[in-house]
Structure formats: structure tokens, C-alpha cells
Image (cartoon, rainbow, N blue to C red; front, side, top):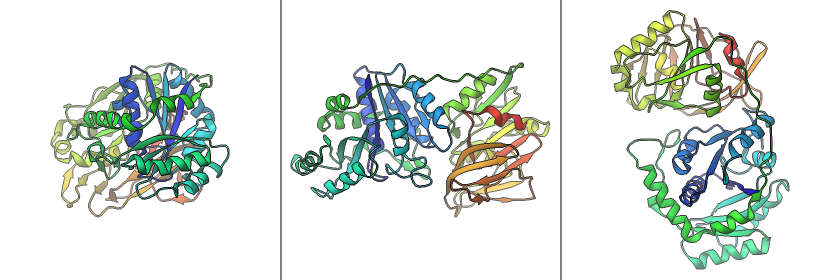
Length: 431
């Protein structure tokens, strides 16, 4: 038995990430080993989780993963933890198709009690019907307790506490508004940037939360047994591969289990398109997404790296390029003013951040007998300078075909789609 719970909210912008980070750090500071998880496909929240808990955060996603795989991941990474905290995504019941892929679906699948974070800034006893609705909408989702956010006084909290007591749910305290614990955001969500001292922000959040949230009571009411689920193993190929993965401030949107699969296929070496002068010797190059648009001048100026990757591609090198990685392989990438910067030039694409609109959603890719899951989330736009070969068909979460391309040129496969292959290494059979 150990404390395990899922932190959710009625809607986005309720403050669940800040409270999650504060709790992760607070419990870590007590000497506990805390294992974080994140519902959904988000890359950035898990990076903050790692900083707060000093433990790798793992994505749980019931669209991209099978239920057995979600259970296996949860069992694998929770086994040695003292406390397990899963952060939800959007509102509790918000999924890609009704509840599919929602925090609620994860909570039911793993039998996790839910701690609801409610923005009560402009509410008093009226929180009662709100909480009642979340408690009774689906009886399989157990609301174990409530933390009220943006509540500045004990007298305000008393109204909220009365509502909880009348509903039979545990009030776990409140968190006053505090600008010093706000985490900066960027167009893809919360930001990761060397310009911000996230460690200090998280430490302040931990201290702030500890004053008004009954942490001991939270740990007491969320005791649960971690299910024992066998973790599948994958046999390595007969020949050990050399695999190069771009990993720096510009390229870092990766899933832990994707990298684990690569490690089972061969020897993984990380390198920096920003700072290294050439591509290491490799049999497979992985260019993940990230924020290349923030480092255009430096990426463009690293001519030896660009030439090294171009030579590799032109000589039949095998490449998986996702979103920012695809943009890097194109001819130019323009900033939000329209100024173009030369990139690698292997793909006849020009991408731009100017006047671009958000494109997002889960993606189901059909390639012959193979199917792969992933998600698309970007603000850039693109134009093909000459026709490129497109492979497979791409569908959204509701099964409707979408126009997102998956390009293939020689042995390079590139797309805006971030793929999840942590459960299925069959992706590499395309080579």
C-alpha cells in the first residue's frame, strides 16, 4: 500500500500543474521517492515533473497505447516509489472522443482516486453542485478529495469546506493566489527555457502549498495497492545498431519508452545539432520535435552539422524526423516575421512561423498492414517546393481522414506527427 492519486480539474487553467509540481517537490524534500506520471501526449509537463521530483515522468495515454501497456508502464515505474502522483490533462472527462483518452479513463483503468483542483476564485457554496456533478457523472471515477485554488482567506475556504462536508468528500485545503509561483507559458504550453529559474519557482510553490493544504490527510486517504503487471520484454536484433538521437534545447520532445525501444535495438548516442560539429556515425538517425524556431540563427550557422546530416540523407541514411525534426530537414524555416533561415535542404519544404495557426489532434496512421498512433501539435505552416512522396493514410481520433502528410524520400520518413512506438517497434520495419 502506498499513496497514489490522480490530480484533475473541471477545466484547463485551474492550476493543477502548479499544484502537482508543488506537491512533487514538497514530498521529495521530505525524503520520499515520488513517481510522477502525465495523462496524455504532452512533452513539456513531464520535463517539469522531472525537475520537481528528480524522477522521470512517464506519459499514460489510452489513445496511443493499449490498456495493457498503460497498466504495465504504471506498474513498472511505480514499483519502487513511496508516493505516485499522476497529473491529468484538460478537464477530468475531456477526451479526444467523449471520454476516450481522458484523465477519467486513466483513473478508472488504474483504479486511482482523483483529487479535484477547483478554481474557486469567484465561487463560494456554489461549488457544491459543481463537485456533485463530477462525483456522480460516472460512479467508477472516485473523487477522493478537493483542493481549492485561488482562495485567499480562511473565511472564503469555510464556505467551500461546508460544501465538501455536505457532499461527503474530503476538503484538503486551499491555495492562495501567488504570482511568484506562476510558470511561464509558450505557444505549445508551459515553457522550457534557460531564461527561467524553474527550480526556484517550484520550490516556492512547494512552500506555498504546504501552508494551507493538508498534505498528511491527502496521503492518508489515497493509500492503494500498485497492481503487479508483467512488463513485456523485446528481444534485440541479431545485429546491434548504432542510433543517433538529436537532444538539445532545440530538439527534445521524446517519450521515455520510445527511447527505451531504441536502446533495445542498439547503442543510442545523443548529439546536439546546435553545438556539435557533425553527425556521429549511425545506422539510424532520430530527429524529434522541439523548439527549432527559437534557435534559427544558431541552427542555420552550424554549417558543418547541416552538411553532415545532408550527406547522410543523400547516401541512403535511415531517418525518422518528427515535427521540428522535419522542419530542420527542409530548405528554410522562417520566424514569425517571415525572415527565412537556411536549414538542411534535403526535403523540398519551406516552413514558417509567420501567421501560422494551431494544428493539433491525435493521429492514427495506416501504412499497409501496419498502424501507428501519434499526435500532431504545432503552430508552423509549410509549403512544398516540389511534390514529395506521401505514404500511408492519416486519420483523427474519430476515424476521419485528415491531410497531414507522412513524407518518404529515400530512407527518410518525416511528418508533423509525433509517433509513439514504445509498445510497438514495428515502425522500424518500414526501413
